[in-house]
Length: 490
Image (cartoon, rainbow, N blue to C red; front, side):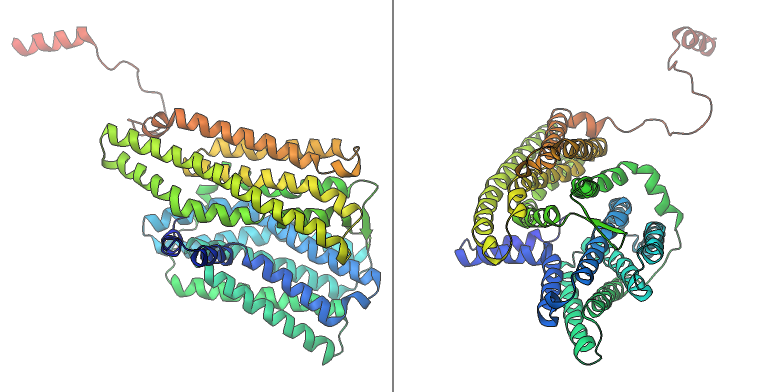
C-alpha cells in the first residue's frame, strides 16, 4: 500500500484548508473515481438518449444486464486477485520483474475460465428460455468479460502505484462510451438500449486495452515461470477465501431478497428486487468515503510506523523492537478511531442530504425506508474491512479468513431472519454480519498485539523441511559422549 503516502504528506504538510481539500480530492481521484465515472457515464447516456421513453420491459432488461455485469465480474475475479497481488508484491520485492507477465497470463486464464464457466450457461438460458435477442445476449456477455479484464488489469497498475493512470483510463473509456452511444442512436438509428450496452462494451474494452498496454510498457521480459504462480494459490489459500467471502458478503443479502416473493424476474433469467438494490447502492455511496479516509491516513501515518518496526526487527535491539511495536499498535488504534469518527461525521451529513433531497427527485417509498438500516450496516462493514487490511499487514491470514467467513455466514443467516421483519429493518442482516465480522477482526488484532513477538520470531524452522522418516528426538547422549572421550584418551 505504500506509494501515495509521500505525495499526501507533501499536500497535507502545509496544513491549510485549501491543501486539506486538495488532499481529500487527490485521495478521491486515486481510489473511487473510476466507479463514479462509470455511474456518471451511464446517467449521461440515459439522459441524452431518452432512456426514460423506452418501453418498461426493455429498460428493465438493460438495467438488469448492467447490474449483473458489475456484480458477477467482481465475484468471479475475487478468488484470484488477492493471491496474485501477494505474488506481485513478492516478485517486486525480489526484483524479479520478468515474473510479472507470467503472473498476468496465468491469472487472466483463470479469470476468463471461471467467468465463462458461470457466464455461458446463464447466457444460454437467457436466449433459450428468456427469448432475448441473440446479439443483445452476446453484447451482455462481451461486457461481462471486458469488465472482468478491466478489474483484473487494475490490480497490476495498482501494484505499480499508477492510480492516476487508472482514473485517466476510465475517463477516456467512459467518454468514448458516451460519444459512441450518441453516434449509434442519432447517426445509425440503433435502439437506445442496444446502443447503451454496445457503447459500454466498447468503453470497457478501451479501458482494458489501455491498462494492458501500460502494463506491457513497464514489463517486457517473460521468464516463463508459470508454475510458480500456481504454487501461491496452495500456499496462500486463505487469501482466496478471504477475498471471495468478503465480496460475496457485500451482495449476499441482496441475493436473499432476490429469492423472496418481492423479487422481480426479467426475461425469465434476471432476478432482482429494485427497491432493495437501490437502497443498497445509496448505502454504499453514503460510506464510500471510508476507503478514501483509510488509504490516506494509513499511507500517511501507520505505514511509516510499520516500516520502523520492520527495520527494528531486522537490525535493532530488543528495546528498539519493543518501542517500535508499542508505537505501531498505538498508531493502529488511533487510525481506527479516527476513521470511525471522521466517517461517522461524513456519513451523517450524506445521510441527511439523501433523506432530504432524494424524495424530491423520485426516490421514496420503500427505498428510503430500507436505506437507513443498510447505511448503518455499510458503515460498520467498511470499518471491518479496514481491520482486515491491518491483519494482512501482520500476515494473520487465518484471522482474515475467519473474519470474512463469519461476516458472510452471519449476514446470510441474519438476512434470512430480517426478511420477516418490517420494511425498515430489512437491512438488519447486514448490520449483524458486519458487527460479527468487526468483533472477530478486532479480537484477532488484540491477539496479534499480545503475541506479536511469538508470531515474528517463532515461525521459522531450524531444520530444513522435507519428506521421509522423522529424525530422532535425541540431541545429546551423555553415556555415548563419555565413551567417546575415553577412547580419545586411550
